[in-house]
Length: 110
Image 1 (cartoon, rainbow, N blue to C red):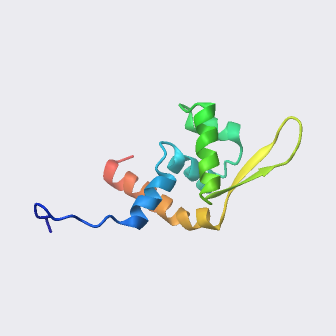
Image 2: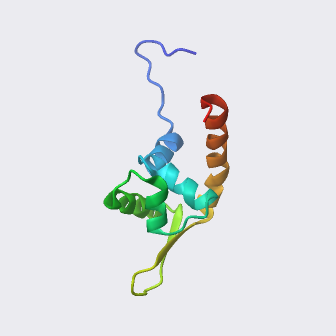
Image 3: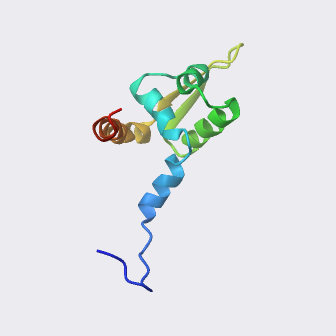
């Protein structure tokens, strides 16, 4: 149903919140590699994604941790060793990642 001129559509808070949480340029791809390819280390993620700077990857990982999708484990070793893993919230997002992957393969021929 089309919106009539002068009418406002109520903003969907759940969708706008989700968009804020996973809307970073690389966040869905980061979650994909951690969830479905068992990539857990910063360097591995950077190699998988390719065209991402260290600072951007670091920032997006930090935001995913802050938003409860990932857990970060620092082993306190030299050289530094840090691993990322899905939290229960991140695990609950896996079916959505799989649906996005399936849609992309079917609709976009990827």
